[in-house]
Image 1: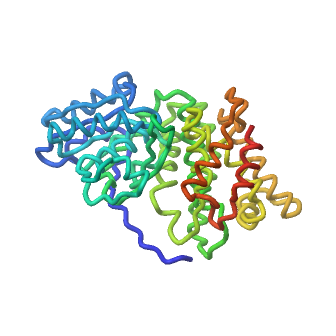
Image 2 (image 1 turned 30 degrees about the horizontal axis):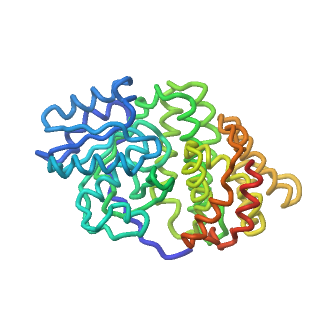
Image 3 (image 1 turned 90 degrees about the horizontal axis):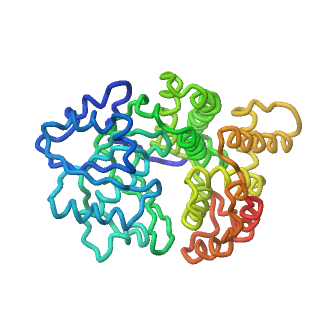
Length: 385
């Protein structure tokens, strides 16, 4: 097991009716910029709950943050926050709103030439405007981590950054606020959480049995409760289970002391940037093919994955390995996330552009063993057609 330092300062407030406690989490006298997305919070009652909880605070609003938050949009919020001297940000929505708000938090006091450099050039973040969150969509785990992914429309780029200074001070997570979400978004959330776990788990053995068991428990729970919560969207216990899985998948716990991959995400970001697919849709397309192409370098963990997560015990090790990948693909498909680009009507795949862009950034080879070369990436993308 690798050495590690684990610190997660987020105060997580979980369960029914917890938005009512929002005022207790806010800093006294804060001038608040409330950020949100396309307006669904005004249809499901969350907006009114938040505004009621903040009735004693000065609150400005910034709506319209996209499902893949766009830099150009976020900079308008940065300008507003600077002009109005905002001293606290409150993200109300899903992981994309929270990701966008993390960037806003870092960009408000940024003293460099261009805030995009935070993503494109890893420009240092010396301070950030404090933020909190009211989560309405389970998927990214952004409510309990310090990472974010932002797109730039002008260049069709989608890049990530992370810094402990953008940890939320608190996150309120009420599973009931997710009841009104369409099936597509719930399915996306389950797939997103599943792949988050796989990026940290399906690498190579590293004498970390507890982290492995944590990861396997999350995967098995998603497999069990993902379909249930699609079929019964207002069953509180099942929905709460899925929401908690999504948080635990990427709050730092299962990744401590173990190698991590994140190739599926890097490839998926390019598919979103070029084709506008949902983030989880790209992950469902990439992961099964990546696992197959890299089956030799991931062999031991893929066999363990098949045996422990999918209960595949019969056959040769190679047969078990293959069956685990087959069942993963079938699970994504059953959740309503096709695993081929053709299902989305995409014929011009931009494969050459994707490979060239990753090469230009110096990202290749990818993976925990750096086994994913340009040639193997081409093979993965070809299988994804």
